[in-house]
Length: 146
Length: 253
Image (cartoon, rainbow over all chains, first blue to last red; front, side, top):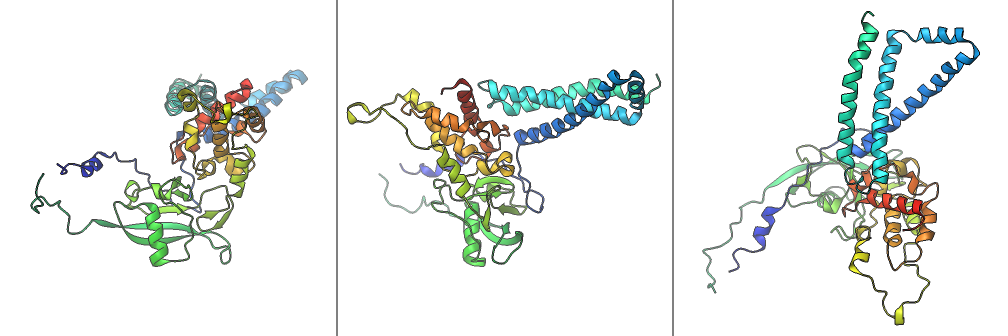
C-alpha cells in the first residue's frame, strides 16, 4: 500500500548545527574553528617568544663582557612588572610548546588530522594544568615577602 | 488494491509557514563605489528555502543589480561559493533554517581573490594554480591492447576522497595563508594533485610532487583546517595535503 512512502523518510533528517551570525564589522572576520584559532595563538606566542629570545641572548651575552654589567641588568629585572612579564612568557611558551607537539602529530601521525580538534582541547587542558601549578607560585614570589 | 477514495487524503496545512529573513549583503559596484558596503534586505522565506533562493528573491523582486554566480543550483557546478555568516559555504547547499534566522544573515564574497562585483570574484588566480599541477592523467606506457586502464577497487579507494572536488574555491578562499600570500597554490590545487598522485594509472606523480615541493607549495600549509571545514563535498582537505607532504618527503606516492 502506498500510504507509507517517501514522505516518512524526510522526518528522520538530522538538524545541521546552527551557524550564528558574526558581529557587523567592516568585513566579517572569517569564523574559523579550533584549527584556525590555535594557529593564530601559535603565531602570536611564537613572535612574542622570538622577541624575548632576542633580549635574552643580549643580556646573557653581557656576562662575557663584564659580570658587573650583567648583574646590574639582571637586578633591574627583579621588579613586579618583570615578574608579570615572566608569567606571560611561561604562558606563551606553555601554549607554543604543547601546540607544537600537536602540529607534529598532525603532520606525522597517520590519524593526526582526524583527531586534531580533540588534540587541541587536550593541549588547552594540559596548558591550564601547567599554569595552575606555576602562576600561584610565581605570584607568591612577585608579591609575597621572601 | 484500494479504490480511489478521498477519505485518506494527506493533510495539507492551510498556509505553509513562512518567516521574514534579514539578509545583509556586502555590495560593491566598481563603477560607482570606492569601497564595498553592507546593504539590508528583508525577504519572506520558507523552511525549505536555501540562501540561494533568498538571493534570487532579492534579485528578482527587490534589486536587479545584485550580482552573484550560480549555475546548477544543486551543489554540483561549484559556482556559488560565498561567505555566509563568516564561513565559506555554497549558497545552494545552505538551508536558511540551519542558520540563525532570528538574526540577520551576512553574505559576502569569498576572501583572497580580487573582488569584481558584489559576490563575484576573479577566479583566474585560482584556476591558474589548478592548471599548474597538471590536472590530467599522465602516462607514457600505452594501455594494454589499446583498451581501458584497469584498476582494483582498493587502488581506486586510495584517492576516492579527492575525486569529489567541484572547484568551488571554498577551501582555497578560507585559507589564512592564501589570503596573505596569493602565490600559494592553495588547498584546491593540492587536492586535485592528490587525486592524480595517488592514482595507480598515473605516472606523473614525480612531476607534481616537484611542483608542490616549491616554496609556495605544500609547505605553506599551516594546518588551520579551515579548508576541511569549508569543503561543501566533505573532502578531508588537510588530510589530503598531509598525505602529499609525506609523499614529497619520501620522494614517492
